[in-house]
Amino acid sequence: MTEGIPVGGLCEECRRIVRQRAARIGRWVAIGTTIPLALYVTLTLPRTRDIRLVGAAAVVIWYVLTSLIARRVAWEWMK
Image 1 (cartoon, rainbow, N blue to C red):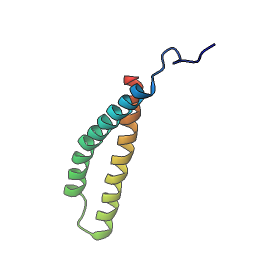
Image 2 (image 1 turned 180 degrees about the vertical axis):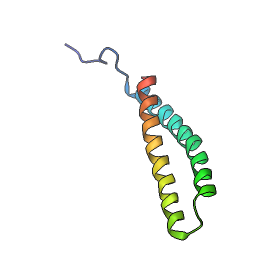
Image 3 (image 1 turned 45 degrees about the vertical axis):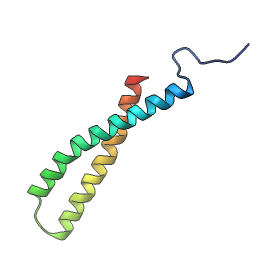
Image 4 (image 1 turned 180 degrees about the horizontal axis):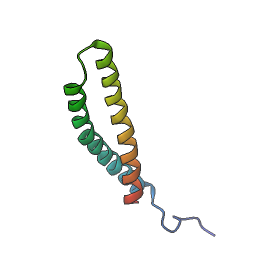
């Protein structure tokens, strides 16, 4: 019996294309949600060095987590 693509599966080329599209969507979603958060943090937090560092770290963590979540959702939606 020959092995092929399982039912509902993707070939390697299609998998690569979907992965790239999902990554692009994840980046745009992360950027779109991080910019308002960064503006909010910039405008509302006190202007002390320690608090600004914590705010900046929170914004970076937000970007990374949002990107990962949106990429996974896009992957599941498109495959």
